[in-house]
Image (cartoon, rainbow, N blue to C red; front, side, top):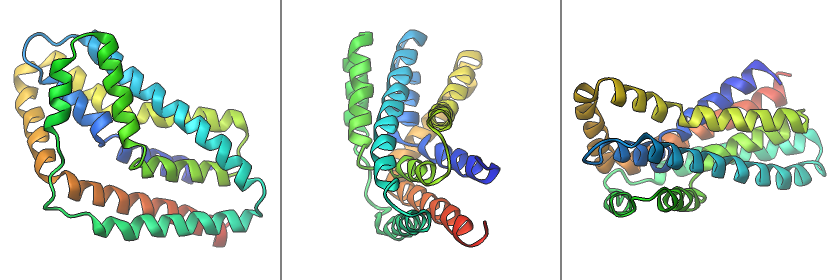
Length: 222
């Protein structure tokens, strides 16, 4: 496990922290009228974190079987192709297309129980399966690195924790200085409603660069 790999994974986790499920639904929970119920927030964030971790473990198990039958350089070349692919498709996201944030806010407001909110978290995770490309890139990097099962499990857990860190920091600010932070949260929510598609493009582009850079470094400079 190298410092470069850890840094790249941390960067990808921070990119993943800006998705609807890991940041914007938590923000909308913080903006729900009335008293903020930390227990509901914890149920939601805990559920989506566990969901990401379990999905990561399942994908790693499958990826390890594939990578195990490939020579090291071949696996790294595949990782490089994936990184370039992510970078290229990032240009296809239309910045004029606005994400449908209203349906998620309606689900949050309509479901008050902890069980229902956990269901919203799982639904958000399932919906994001097709777009959790930074996470898939991170898993590819772990699978092609010379890591044992314990190290991969530790990195996956750390990835998921970093992924929810911005939401936790905003929660702390919301509890400490509600009057000051709520206008900021509202601005973030409004900005995402207007710029969500172009933001996704930027995330994919940066993720593709990090994945490709890691492959190039290990192919030519190690």
